[in-house]
Image (cartoon, rainbow, N blue to C red; front, side):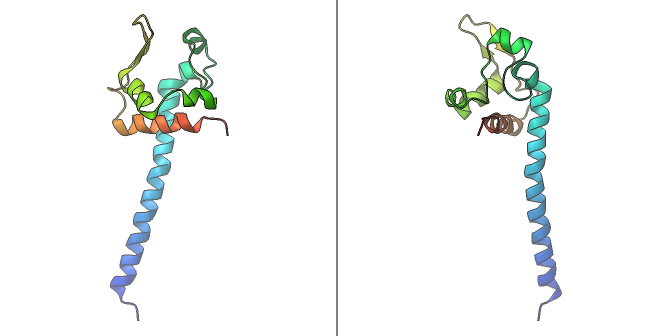
Length: 118
């Protein structure tokens, strides 16, 4: 015979599992929202870099597997947090350390990886 405590424990575990699953979906939504807010003006919504500024800066097409192989997650995270400069030292991407938390920046790296054509 089940006791009310066991039944409550099972329900609590199911609720906790549901919250964890939903938090992943929310993080995904946040990454897409952050991409559109901070990145898409240069990198394009689809990651192609097919924007006026993207063309000017020759940004990579993140849908391309070879372009994605050209950088590590750590390098992408560093660029998001610290910005990027060209070989002459001119800023080509502003830093987002003040606007994005570490978790949001990591979620953006995962988002960039998801843009790769399958």
